Length: 512
Ligand SMILES: [Zn+2]
Image (tube, rainbow, N blue to C red; front, side, top):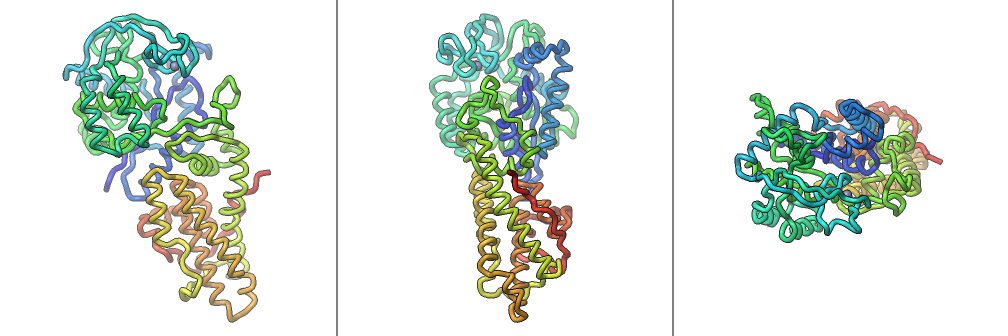
């Protein structure tokens, strides 16, 4: 069985998740479900980045004196958000867990032994918002260009990582592996950075209030990014000494896909692979950076009051509607814009009127003309070809394999539109009036019902709750249907005749 190990970034927990975090996590969930359908043993990781000064300061603002209590509370909030949104992660890592501390220690000592850690003096700026050492060129009037707050000038003795040792190896690896950094514009961006701007980086802080202590030097804490990146190894037992842990690590590493936002490209596409090279570990197959998104054209920010809470939104529209909207609206990898008006219009037009209405009308007609049962299909009559054939599946899989989720949804909606058109053309209500056309009516209805079953399969990774609702209304057992291998499930004609359908309420009730 092939494996597929994918991850989201781990998130800072100085605030609750917003729609941008949900976007990354939802995309990861879609891909995890898709690869499970294709028969891979999937390991889907997300988690929280807890050794950060940002979290420490947020705890103080929240008047929580006990940092651990604050971290526990906030991390639980993130976990429950993903549960409410139906995210199917296999593990949730917190970087304050013992397993992570063990892995970080092991990693540090390995890199140190390989000669890539040295002591030096750091003199420069640090932005707490970025949790990054910044250079004068990153500042505008002594403020961080992103956070618009003054960066702190610091001068301290700390440890450095010989990042520049890996300049040539990184450039070569990126050139030899065109899928390594995606999309292309991010690859070009990172090559420029590695060639012209990359320097050795400070990887520890002196007398620090939070953070993992440097092994054998407790007055120093490990720089939060150096610790955080190692989470991708920790979760698959890099730090474990047990045989079971070693087997798991060997099986799952290197990761197949690491999803990130473009703001953390440098850390993931330069520092992280160099750290891995230094620790004698292979690099992930693909690092994919998605774009930013704005809300009605504006940057999402607390001060603008336009921060979107994904859980509140899902209460109104459903988890699947949010998934559908984010994936169809934004080309993955590009910047995008989120608009409540477009969400509502899209929901009513595409989900309620097109998909929801197709399901409801086909089941209503089955009830009315076919005694509530799936009719027998007699012959492939003229004009009643299967609506969901090999070419549909091929286009769908090709889009999914290339992160083109908007196109994958386009393929699904092509099937929906064709089915709706077929009903309008064949007019089952007329076919039902005449005994001579009974056979054609049965064949038409079978064709439409089987199309719904197949739509369930196409929708399963992207809109899992909708897929299950469709199958339930078709009278199928969700468990039995899901237990099929995708290759078998997509063969036309899998719906047995005589099954009693269970027409329910419309799956996407209109929202006014
Ligand atoms: Zn900043």
